Length: 369
Ligand SMILES: Cc1ncc(COP(=O)(O)O)c(C=O)c1O
Image (cartoon, rainbow, N blue to C red; front, side, top):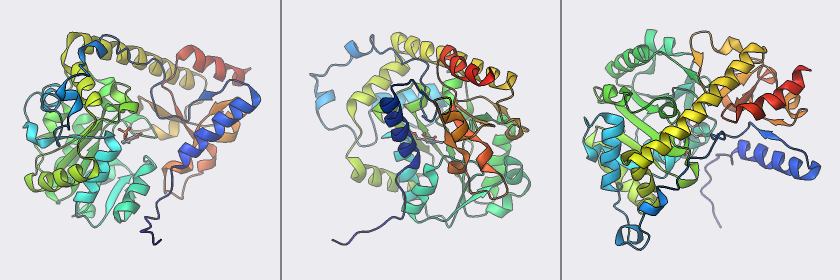
């Protein structure tokens, strides 16, 4: 059998998780899985949503509309775009990864630049799409030298994975404007933002002024439904959308209706909004307390947060994978998230701070004694 090899690698982070789970079973000891990329403070309570979904209906049982459940694209338009975009610009995808993959399958760009510290999956995605991958040092570099990135694509991820840092919105919007003048296609990959912002957040509405910008987002983090595999892509470019739509159709023949309907109910009904608010309030509260704890005890790697502030759901701490493992704390080494050579990645690890504060402090306090 001849294989069309992508040269991409199976996620090494998944391997770390499997190893830690094995260790916890073998030793019978409790581990804190801060290697994970999910919100673990609380689950979203869907008990009032489930009864609203009619599993005996044609809507649930027949093929879904290729570009997404119309009520869901309308809800996204209202909630995320202040009703200012056209629903035909929104495409429902099987999570953010699927949105990104189809985006880079569709775009014809010579190169893609990610932040210097980036979600490791981007590397593999670009390998599969055969697009050379480089990085930019900082948003300042984009702002000061936008011409360097002419005709390529730039990913902006804010708050970022793995740093969990948040930049000034005004500066980011200004930067996108400068890049657009140099024909840079900006992919605004923002699955973390909406966890921290409510319906009054108008960032996407403001980004509508740009023609060369694609938004990819997901419900994995903002409402904690990573298991449902739901996200979306937004673009104003009709030609791009036409090709994206074809690729979306042939990648999965529509997106699971349970996930779409459930999220539509979360975005539009009082019960759904209440469930999302409870989830976000509790999650953000504990994330903030955990970051505060790390700062107060000198664990936060402050050198990464000179021009930004750590918001979550991840942060970089100045302990490495092995040091954390001695205290049964899972993490991911920093070298999984950068191509940079001028930094001693062995000194640091990425941890997820979206876990119950009491448990988080219980594990970390053992290190202080
Ligand atoms: C930066 C970034 N973008 C996109 C995603 C995609 O998430 P999902 O496919 O679960 O929606 C992730 C997930 O960890 C991420 O960290």
